[in-house]
Image (tube, rainbow, N blue to C red; front, side, top):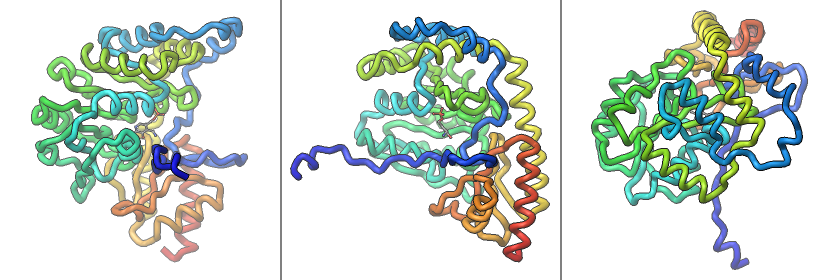
Length: 354
Ligand code: PMP
């Protein structure tokens, strides 16, 4: 069929499984095991459905203002979207329009190459070092833009602000996007570097540290100039990306800093305990500063462990891809969920003679 020649054909991103089974332990998509801040429930309880009649505020002002206040920036420096996936996709569309390839690590968030493909952006994936670190010198080459997560996914490895700044210094002519989806579990944000670098865009999300993956809220903070360019593109695609309930819940969630610190702190503590427990079971992993651990067993095959965990209704993430096919990405759950994981792993390792 000749119309097929004009179809934009892409190989889509594969999201982690959302199994429709009861009684599972779900450690496969880096969701937060704790509920959102209690104030969010109040918003939902008091929501007047008559509000739905009207379009939401296209500027998402209540949410933008709340984010600006929380991170001590101007509202004109904040862009919001339907999860950070939407924000990053908009950033690709807005900023990556040159002929030179954009750069990102070889082992990283597997959506970056998909967006590059869908928008026809050339790209180079630069190999991380043997221990999954970014060598900033690799990024001192001609490029059409740069993106990397910090901490990286799926490795959990955190790069220092010095490394981030070295990349920025070497690239005054490129937009540099730092994807901080997991920054709140122990990382140091690049936000202070915004004072010096007009070409820096920091992206964060409510999906992990704020327990609101299902609500779909992501945001970018950058110079007023970058944010204006992103909003111009957004308003050229869809003015009403954020629905009214989401705007109210998103703004409310930020008011409860104590709850935020408490839940992120609990996850970090469970992660530190998991490092000990997994080591005892014979796993190694790069040191994680995120809400997941990227673990490899000294003898047992990752694909086999993955399947056997699944049989026991424990879901983790596994990619049969170069460099990482012996690793499992395990999201940090509640201490109780993690105990069940260690019990299952102990059984499985016995079963396979590891
Ligand atoms: N960046 C990274 C590195 C991620 O792991 C994820 C989660 N899949 C995202 C962005 C997108 O998250 P969300 O769209 O839920 O904000």
